Image 1 (cartoon, one colour):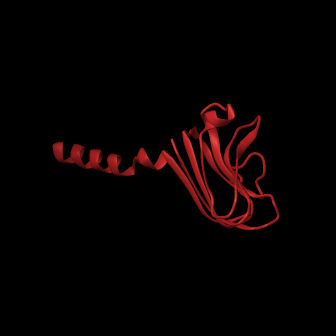
Image 2 (cartoon, one colour):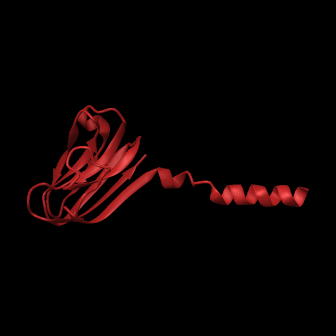
Length: 121
């Protein structure tokens, strides 16, 4: 019986999602690059995380752009314009937003941008 319980416990532990997987989000690639159903405001121009208590969104535009690095919720989309060769470190409080939001990087300028965005909760 103990062996069975140990096996069940091991299987449950391996199948449970790790806490770390829910604490960050990353997009690396071109913007715009199609349709992202996670985005509330500009789904054909951006990449967005799921809902979370985000504390930071770190965006970098390598080429092209500009791109808006920041956060969105049902009421608004806010961020900092980030141009080729620039980084933007944004926090929801920078824009007067609550921390339960979606992290986003959006490019609706018409000039494709190669970007990287990383958000942490």
